[in-house]
Length: 474
Ligand code: FAD
Image 1 (cartoon, rainbow, N blue to C red):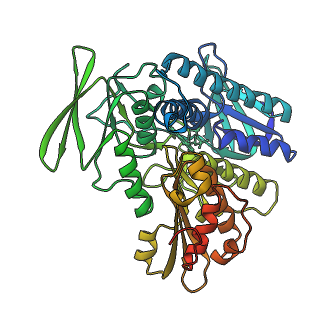
Image 2 (image 1 turned 90 degrees about the vertical axis):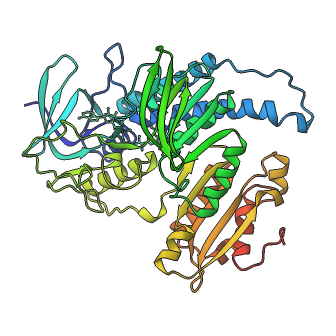
Image 3 (image 1 turned 90 degrees about the horizontal axis):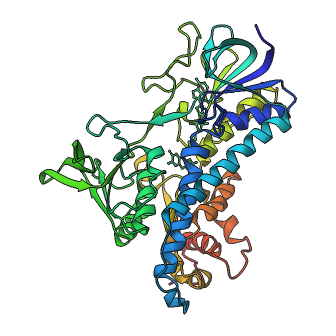
């Protein structure tokens, strides 16, 4: 039996590595187990988010947005930039370098904070013991006062479209495409599908998105999903709703025939690459011994209470492997909450205040309730909406598409939701999150002074519009 730790964290994604660093900062003797290794056998830290998720996708989105602006937005501003082109291989190399810098940074943070990194696959045994099998098959067992399971998620695969090297790809494969395919198919019009579609449409690919559901982005507020569908279609994404993939065939080893059904019957689509982006499932295979005491729910997530406690005393679980939205910031905040509880502090998470963002252009961002949710709950509400087309700063920035929509309780004026379609919606939404976290009313934001000229003024105007008093729009 090796050293006893105060906390062992299994998984070094944004849930696990943040929990481990926080635990060490609070003076707890901490280890973090990570099974992912690179081709040199070194542990890969940062999980899905840093390696094959949030960060690489945003690197590609930023580059291709600049390309799009140069090709389609510069001329109107008098900037002459003829024949602007993209070197997609260089774009992908830059993305890889950003990932390398960030993941290397976590190794440095572990060292600086005194977190012990245990390379290997962790398995929770009974009595808060963690068995670690390293890349060479060596097994060690470690004792802990507390265990935090942060094993994350993996892409869902669908039988009609089995992954096929270079042709049918999941999110990891999709992020390594280094040349714009002439025809790109995407199964799933969710966050990942729309972000990937945007990247390659901007590089000139003909993008077709097949979505099995009849509604587009049904999680988002109805005004956001309508506006997003209109704008993304204008950008060249051919989004087919009610289109269910039934099979795929590789033709001559170089293209993919996708069969799907829609309201008109059986259809076919031929593409050069197909990305499967139909969602993710919790990664728990081999994580728990039979007598660990930790239970899974009916969907395979680790069962936890609102404080992320599992059924086994002293064992917590966080992030994508437990209920709730699969988001990096949700995983990290759960990690901090759990470690604070372990350290004896009072800690809780406000699950009503988690921002959601889709990094298309314009970006889509929201927090709180949608209009549809409030209607179905029978809540009486007021809505204020302000278009960026009426914002001087948005005009100056050449980003006038979209709006800020604020929803407040009709009786109390308390803000219930903020929904934004706009150039920097991902940044603006933080204002809605902070307002809601402090239980603000629309009037609180009406009385707040926003600098002029800023895009943020649209948040102020939307708050004013809740009571019909927006200044710059009739
Ligand atoms: P993960 O990041 O999945 O990390 C889990 C870690 O645990 C992995 O490193 C894994 O190797 C390790 N592990 C698993 N089992 C074991 C074991 N038994 N022993 C040892 N190690 C183990 N979220 C956002 O908030 N914003 C975004 O912009 C965003 N973009 C995304 C884009 C894409 C393409 C994808 C795929 C995801 C995106 N996400 C985004 C989601 C985000 O990546 C996840 O919500 C987040 O990574 C979850 O963190 P986690 O720590 O729970 O799990």
